[in-house]
Image (cartoon, rainbow, N blue to C red; front, side, top):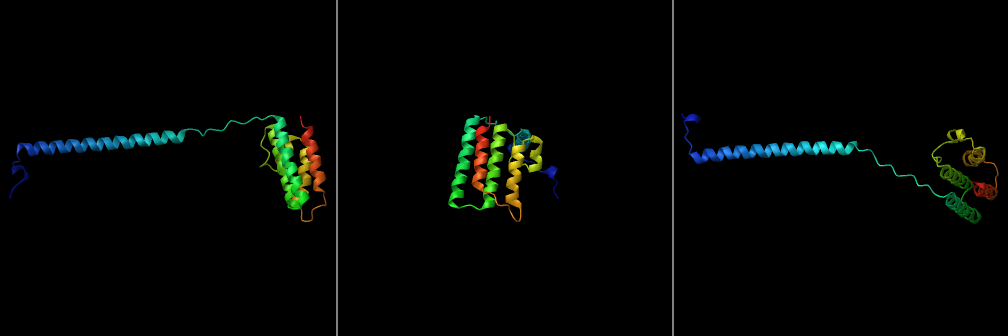
Length: 160
């Protein structure tokens, strides 16, 4: 029986074996280093805060024109009879909240009526109450939407 120590390899085989081991070791170390660098970069990219868009401040007159034209479009739909009474008052509420939000530069659309009360805007609270009565009650009161829209138009035109 022959032992591994008894095997005599020529010199060039030993040199090839040593070069192969060195190359494999360098390749392993290089791959390991690349993997570590990739993990570090990926963790750094997760820590960056999200970029918030800058708020757009528009002139009050352009805001008024936008919401008055939205009310005019709603009046047209009401006159043609394309929209139900509940939908009319839902849209009126959204238009009014959107106008107040942009004019005062606060977020008003997703808030409830009780969350809007600290603003101490009696007209806004009254109009939203009227919209809610028609929009959510089982037997809505008879309210003329055209008069309601014209009163909101007057309110928007008077806004400073």
